[in-house]
Length: 326
Ligand SMILES: CC(C)(COP(=O)(O)OP(=O)(O)OC[C@H]1O[C@@H](n2cnc3c(N)ncnc32)[C@H](O)[C@@H]1OP(=O)(O)O)[C@@H](O)C(=O)NCCC(=O)NCCS
Image (cartoon, rainbow, N blue to C red; front, top):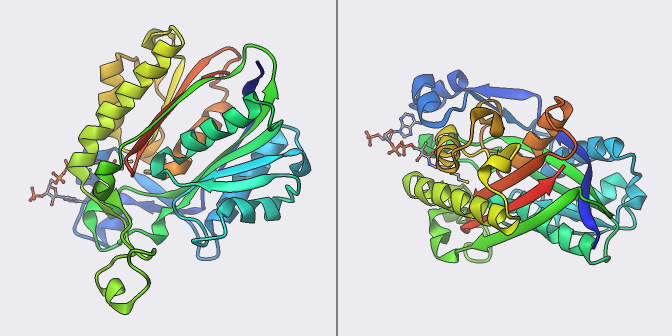
C-alpha cells in the first residue's frame, strides 16, 4: 500500500509581535506570571488586511515550492481552522482559488487545536486508498479576531499563524505510519466560542454578552489535555510496536509550556526529543504543529528516516496523533 509522504513544508507568521510587556498595558497581568504559567513570551498578530486564507496561502506557497509541485497538481486541499474568513464558504475553497489549485476538492476541518492532525488523517486516507495523489494540508488561524482582549485568563495564550504540508502517495518506508483520532463532545463547554452561529445568531445583546469571543475553563482543560496527549501518543507508538525511545522528535500541539513539560515527563522523553516554539508563537491552535514542523525542517533538524510524532488536543474535546517516518 502506498503511504502519504510529506514532500514539502511551509509556514507563515504575521509580522506584528505582541509581547508579554505589551499585554501588561492591555490587561491586569505581568510578564513574570505569563512566563511562569505558560512559557509564552510573545505571539504574532495578523495585520488588519490579513485573513486566515492569506496566512494559509503564504504557508502553502512555501510548501509547494519545497515540494516542487504546481498548484494544479494538487487534487485535495484540507484546511484545519476555527477562524475561517467566513462561516462559509470554507477557507479551503478560498485557498484553492488564491493558489489556482483548480483540480482540487477543498474543505475545512473543524477540530480546533487538533485541526491539523484531523486534516492530515483525512488526507492520509485519500492518499492511501488511491483517491488522491497529491494533497495540501494546512493549519491556519487568526485567533486574535475571536479573543476577548479584556479577558486576562485567555488573551495571553493565543497567537496567529499558519503551517502547511504537501503530501504525495508514494511506495516505500517513508510517510504517515498511522493516525489516531478521538473526541469527547461532553466537554464542549470547557473550550468554545458561543456566538455567532445558529445557536446564538448575531445580535446587539450577544455582543454585549461578549458571545463572539473564545471561552475557556483553563484548569479543567489543562488536566484533560495532559492525559489525552499522553494516551494518544502511547496508542500511536503501540500501534507501530514502538516506544517513546524510538521517537526522534515529538511535535506536540503548542498549547503551553507546562502542558508540554508534563507530557514530556510522562513519556520520559529527553529535552531534545520534543520540539517547542510556544515561547515565540503562543497557542496558534490548528496551525501550531505544521508551523513547528516547518521550522524544524528548515532549521535542518529533521533527518531521513526519523520517527516524528504529531500529538494534538483541542476544543470539542478532540485529540489525535500521527506517527510519521520522515
Ligand atoms: C490558563 C492557565 C495558564 C491558568 O493557569 P493556572 O495556573 O490554572 O491559573 P488559575 O486559573 O488557577 O489562576 C491563578 C490565579 O492567577 C490569576 N490570573 C489568571 N490569569 C492571569 C493573568 N493573565 N495574569 C495574572 N494573573 C492571572 C487568576 O485570577 C488567579 O488568581 P486568584 O488566585 O487570585 O483567583 C492554565 O490553566 C492553562 O494553561 N490551561 C490550559 C489552557 C490551554 O492550553 N488551552 C488550550 C488547549 S488546546
